Every structure is written in C-alpha cells, then in structure tokens.
Length: 140
Image 1 (cartoon, rainbow, N blue to C red):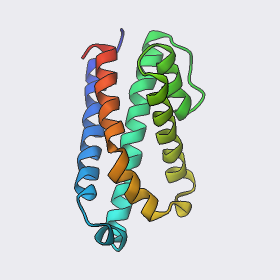
Image 2 (cartoon, rainbow, N blue to C red; image 1 turned 90 degrees about the horizontal axis):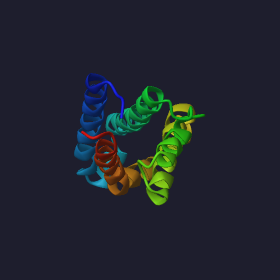
Image 3 (tube, rainbow, N blue to C red; image 1 turned 120 degrees about the vertical axis):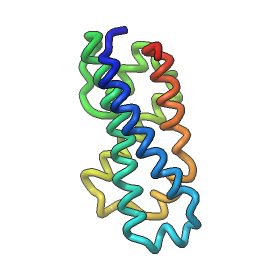
Image 4 (spheres, rainbow, N blue to C red; image 1 turned 180 degrees about the vertical axis):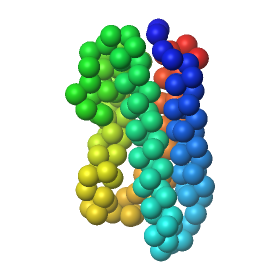
C-alpha cells in the first residue's frame, strides 16, 4: 500500500483533535449544549474537520494507489470498500457521515441543533472505528 506517512499522520492528528473536542461537547447536558451558540458552532466545525479528514485520508490512498477516482465525499468511502477497507454496513454509515458533512457545509441553516447533539451522542464511535479500520487497511 503506497502512502505518504507524514501526510497520513498529520491528517489523523487533526481528526483526533476534532474528535477530542466533540467528546468534550458530548459530555455536556443537552440543555447546556443547545443554549450555547459557541458550543453548537464548535460542534459543527469539529464535525466538518473530522469527516473531511476521513475523506482526505481515503482520497490520499485512492490517489497514491491508482484506485478508481471518487465522484464525491460519499463515493470516497465506496471506493475504499471496493478495495476491501470497509464492509458494506460500515461503508453505509460512512456515506451517511459524508452526507451530513455536506449538509453542514452547504445548508448549515437547515441543521437541527438537537439532531447535531444526538449525532454527537450516538455516532462518534464511527469516527473512531474509521481510524482503526483505515489504519489496519494501510498497515499502520
């Protein structure tokens, strides 16, 4: 598997930092989160960083190894599944994650803050699992 180790480690570090911020926010009571626009903004930004980092890690492997070019963020995870990095069910979760990122970036005014809080409560494990399975796939 071809990849630039420094680049991969830098992106992983950014994803872990974003995940750490999200973990801090996850520990808040729902009311405290929902009534603080700074915490909501931080959560949105950290989600974007974590999800884009995951996609960037995949795009790096795709480019370095001559895999099929992904059409968009969601397809990036599909390409990696085609190469054996992720199973079908987990890939579907990653695709949903990419679609949520698109909503955050492109129609941010339509994000329900309660939905964001719920995602932080229930879905951060997907990012942790991604890092583990990605690392196993590339051999780090």
